[in-house]
Image (tube, rainbow, N blue to C red):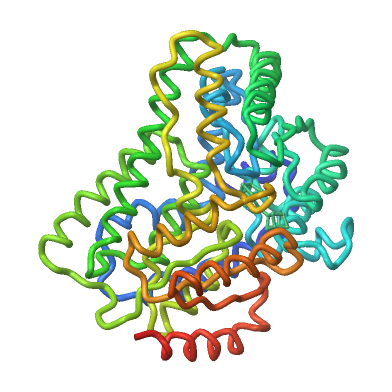
Length: 422
Ligand code: BJ8
């Protein structure tokens, strides 16, 4: 801890404010994670990462930087990590899931902005997150209006490159995204001083595919009639996927899956009698475990997340057959353009995904959750509700933020919804 204090000081962090953030985390972890029964033993790695979330990984990143390495902070499932790692850089997600950072963001943004965006600015400008301090450059993306405009403010304090994400999915848009990936390659090459070679890119396509495959394996195990792991624990794994070393993460997730396979064979059930719930909607950045905690203490078990901290992050691998740089880049572009974010129109694929996942995971109901002031997911909820009704699947819509102000009211609604499930 003393070493961490020194490291945080050297990063120019606001230590007093950061101590306040650190003070609340252990309590939250105890309430949400340690209170669960019958957890897989191999969650110990992920618990350890969480317990020292601002220590272990930032220290690794700083060591990497001492040797001339460059760190790139990202905010969206659309940013292709393959390219950054292939240039010898490190990509790290910059989570923005804490209410602690929201008031800081409100100094720069209207109060009626999505909490994820406010937390993003608060974490940077309040100087209370070592990941935000360590990243040499941020990679933003044109997705929702709030993020797009917030990046303009963020970019006054840190080098920031914006990828222009198309908002439709025609052939021309896939080509456009390939162009944006080429531009990103130029940016990371300039920043790192390294060339992205065909060999490195092919290798990192494989490495990131292996990470996605491990996550898919974890999710497939949740299709079992008896839940071998809680949704809350799986959410933590998905959140850590954004910032841990990708190869170590793959290895540790596969070790966890080995244990879960045995659990499935032994008929272990972490939530006997609970209703199987599919969560859909906006991402849940660390430490946002609010909805999973409510659902799993109200008679439900979350067996799948159609979110960017869920299936949208890992479904569909990059085609590994590309030989030339252009082929590989187009294959990367095609894989990422398969993500169905509500920023796109039309976005029929997302409705199909939710229905497909509801069936694959044999769920009893869907809880569609969007952060307050997220217009795209909020508006899409209307059509999603219609599609699910047509498919005979029950859905509950929840709008929430990072505070606990609405927690008891939401719990009442979730309990009532779960009671209606057969
Ligand atoms: S690919 S979901 S990670 S943009 S919740 S900030 S959309 S107002 S986070 Fe996202 Fe990429 Fe899409 Fe995924 Fe805006 Fe909505 Fe806030 Fe959001």
